[in-house]
Image (tube, rainbow, N blue to C red; front, side, top):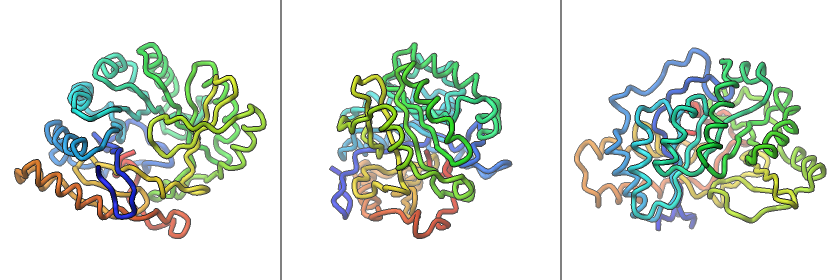
Length: 324
């Protein structure tokens, strides 16, 4: 197993297949941003399969396909099928904004993707348009219903909760998730790049207290994907709430993941700068043993924790550059 110098087992890799996106969420990508990675620097599907194969041989069991918006990467279901066939890979999931999902849901499910995280910050069309820079809510809803019909489970709604922006929409989102059997995950805005720092941070601890009182939520110990969220459920099991709280209650001591960007750079922490470039090794013809040794060397760089509270201006790269 891969283990870092703080005794944490690395069993989860978030794989960015593109840094491009068809939306411009205000907390993620600046308007007019054009600093995307050149396609010739993207890892090919063969290179991705080599890297993920090396990780699975070293004990990594979970892979999440991310972006940018991963469904903008051509032939993504073909890559998903290759990865899901790797020995030792137990869980292949996808994060998406769902604008393209109606076209790919069945193919992705057939390829072995089973779980989806879908970004949706409001059910109000005007709010979504303002946040994403696009009148995208109808397409997102179409994608959500296509995913439900295709049999993905669980489907999680990722809602970045922001003070004075969409915090009044939380109860409506709870009702929507109860109606459709979705899991709601509330996420605190993180100071990643200028866009993240400009987001209207909302402490989720008071929100949790309010929802616990309203819905009788009880802590849940079940593993819903191996990520950083903590979960609560209603006594009848009809509704599950997850909270991702990197600011008000960070989870660094149990961090089990690294991120691989589209250009082959391994990022050890979303809130630190430690990184390791794998693309030069791959294109120099490294052996599998050399690749595995490089991954072990990279994991030694993983820091103990982020410094979002102490140094909120530290990370200048935007979220899509690192991978969601």
